Length: 612
Ligand SMILES: Cc1cc2nc3c(=O)[nH]c(=O)nc-3n(C[C@H](O)[C@H](O)[C@H](O)COP(=O)(O)OP(=O)(O)OC[C@H]3O[C@@H](n4cnc5c(N)ncnc54)[C@H](O)[C@@H]3O)c2cc1C
Ligand code: FES
Image (tube, rainbow, N blue to C red; front, side, top):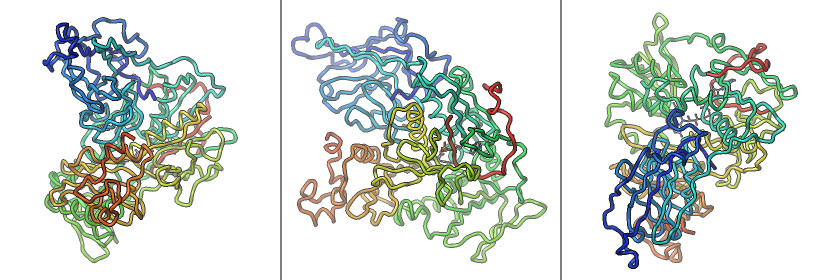
């Protein structure tokens, strides 16, 4: 899958050179550092910028785009090894697999993780931080998050005279498709990846995205981790991008009803929709404006967070240093109990308490008290009264699918749109993706699940687009999630719903551990702090369709099964993970519900074309 428009204009030759005098011995210069002839870019830009990488240009015609550098001896790398090689003006990731060398960009285009610390398996490298996967032969992104692929460089071994082909440029030829319009409702990760994939695959007719947001698609997970970011700082693509690829984005536009028979969509301007909040200073963080405002109001003030959810805890962590006090109110007795289990939840809670966050557990809010319209106190069912200048509600997200009620599209009892493995709804030509859907998860025997993760939304968008173009592609991915608090990242892969045991290796108190979530005898999910790249490793094993048994990760269970994977018990990793590794459309997304409809401007009129 060519997942980006970027990084195809740069050819970087990495010559794995054998010096003349040593050629017969197949030995190379011991000088690990390259001596570049000419070097231009290293392709590690966090996001694609049009002015840097014009898509239509021939990637190889400019000799200034080429650096030839001798980087190592062919024998310096074993099969299955990766190495960052320095070309003098930048780096590349050199990989040897099955006797062949490959070279790609060394930094993950998502948040810049060093891919050399990731996991190499069967032709792809998985990022150690949030699980994005890249094909080592082409640099293509194969799993998410992130929108861009890696630059691919040429590797030439002079001894073997082996020269690889360059990555193929994206085809922008017209796609032979009878449908002419794609409407994408929602400009989140799923919607954006869908639109980009359509263009990447050659769809050349009209694509319109509409969003209730005021902004072009942005990095939503940053709202609770970097709360004072401006929208431009977290934009996923610059606005020129949408013009260049002719993706129309209608901002502050709500679809209020859909008629799938006539393909009519009823739009209305967002401005008319927002009702004033009953009490000021109570927030639900969905937009950069929400996040910015909370930071402003919370500085040196008392903050109450309702719900120890991912969002609630990230906001609590962010505000802990800035606010006078931060209190978290939660129904359970430890945070994340259902998701990470009791012991991990408790360890995380301790980290928060060490950072001045107070918890009010096994209770809930009974009243928000105001004075002159402004929040003053939060009253708990336990009777406790908390002083509050700002309240952030981190519970109760529901899919905003109310506007589809009359559409005939299958919605389940919780409000999620039901799709199959190709992200198709029950209505032909109508697809759905992202937080708002339930879909069959191959990893859990095709159980229909909702996985509200950033990575999953990307993948859904991609699969939906491919199937709009009749590729017949079924979703096959391992859910991957991360969260970050007080400088610690928790990574998580798999689908642990209904786990019945947690096997922990490492030290919970030190927050340096891996936790395996098991159901019966099988590992269904994994979480870690400070244990990279274990989560990416497990994700790769699961992605390869392999099963990890409890006895493979649990010394006690292994002792009971003397014929376990290794036939012995011992400290983690019991399982030799590396050996396992060897072996007219519509989208709808999660958002708080809004009022019902009126007749639209915009899409109904083919002349209404907005390009930002
Ligand atoms: C603060 C925050 C932090 C998060 N942190 C993480 C994290 O660390 N890791 C992680 O994996 N996930 C995280 N998530 C979850 C992640 O952001 C979501 O899984 C992802 O955004 C889902 O993408 P989506 O495209 O399905 O929908 P969304 O990103 O929710 O986008 C929905 C889009 O649909 C539009 N829309 C909805 N209804 C209508 C309508 N009727 N008419 C027009 N437009 C409509 C909205 O305006 C919006 O553009 C976080 C979420 C939030 C809110
Ligand atoms: S930095 Fe690689 S997936 Fe996020």
